[in-house]
Image (cartoon, rainbow, N blue to C red; front, side, top):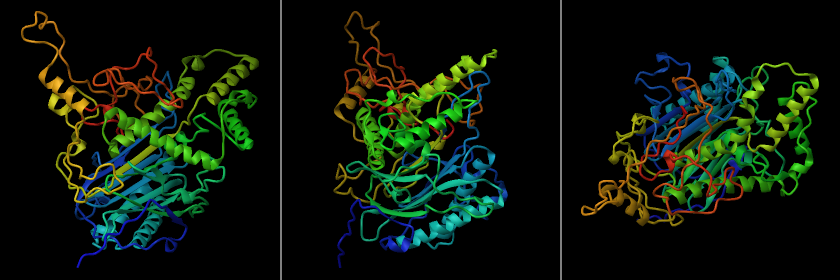
Length: 579
């Protein structure tokens, strides 16, 4: 007897009670881990010792939390400025954290943003990850009681939040936001249920190659009202000394197809795609502009008398209502991902999506960092009260004009599908180092995956994805050109002096955005844009969007080293949680 396959659309269901959401039966869950990754530093294992391991040697359901894959990846960095004299990063320690546990046909993703700065905020975020992940993995896999419906998934997620709060209280942590997501296969269907639960301003999204980006957690914040980016809206931890604040705790449900990418972000990522934050538009509510100017004055002026940005600086920009800003932010995310796919001529993986979105935020906020990293601000010299007010006024004006928001920024992503583990995991691949062999740089994947589901009709291609991506004609020509060393002929008198095509060099950021690397002093170098004029992009041109932070001009000097995640001839290393 054949059953009719069930197909769901791209609708988003949200409520503060999971009973109000659709009850959908799930297929059996695989328990074989192919990726378990947490960061920055030790991630959810921060501050734990071997006593936290169970009898099988596992911490929170996995033996190691440094196994990352292109299909399951995360990045955590700091966008704050670096002191030009003592090389210390503002905002340290990084209070964001993420964790991902990906199994054959399902995945658990967590992301947390410690409220404010300091050690307690960092501890709270990592305690939340450990408490939540430990309960989910133990309940669903260690005890072999996996959920059989979406309602059971939401029940597990809700109880995991209680465990996260209890862990924070036991270890005397601070406050943190938390967003948890489980991706599970739907019974009698080739689709997957994306179940999210969040409190605070950490959100979850789905990227579909054919339908764009949609937010699963939008029910936790009213997109028709102006949101105060200083207020997270909720948090777990001792808000009143004992209890959490769960005002905006919301369940979200949507459905995805194989090949879609589910990703979670903290506000350091999501807010930097808001058109008002990026200075593309102005808020229709003038009170928000005045409040933002007052914040700039309080933050960068000692006596509070510095003048803020004049109203004339926002003239000519469109006014946007809160709902329009929300739609624009997701369209801007889509633009960044599609531009990356346009350059690489390949569909974005989970790792490449993380790298592209973080790179955009780094470039966007670079002007703000340069204002605060000016060595002249730190010279010891006596200033009169009038000169000090003039200096503070200039800083406030420059910071108000510069786009972006300085914050800790984290993202974790998972490519939906049925994957098999492989020994060639990415934890053995260094972020930076000597040039690898040609065979390594021409590889597209670090491991081989097998997708047991056929492509959904909504996906661009109907064939199943193999381990190596399809080589386009332009890329095939350049690959042949590299392998055959085209550029000189045997009988040519100039063959000895003709240059050969060399493989690209590794790219790495000079600026370290966290303390995870144990190298020397941090360099205040700014992030660089990829060189689209170098092979294989020698004859390739496309018009940059007018809203891009650093449009590429024909005469502009750009780095000769393209981003690792954007180069088609090497493994996409991109950013790490340790960058």
